[in-house]
View 1: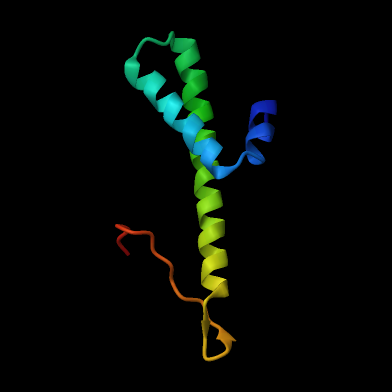
View 2 (view 1 turned 180 degrees about the vertical axis):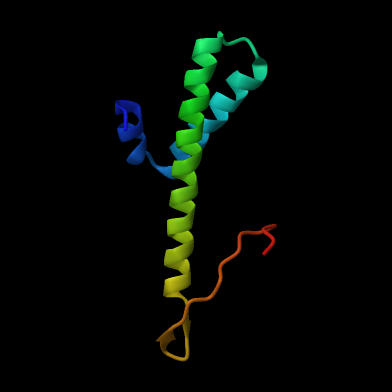
Length: 84
């Protein structure tokens, strides 16, 4: 785990998404030198994984908190537009 990845672990979801969007824009523009593009791509993959973990954690917490008949019952939580 490199220093950048260590820093990203504590990054709030919104900040990680904003940074990921900036990286995608830079890569889509195609004006980044190859070595920098590879570094940006790697950082983008790490940010994507971080966002996915954070969303999974929130989904799990929401499922756990939903109550039915005074018992905690796991109820699947789907984001709008998500197919299961």
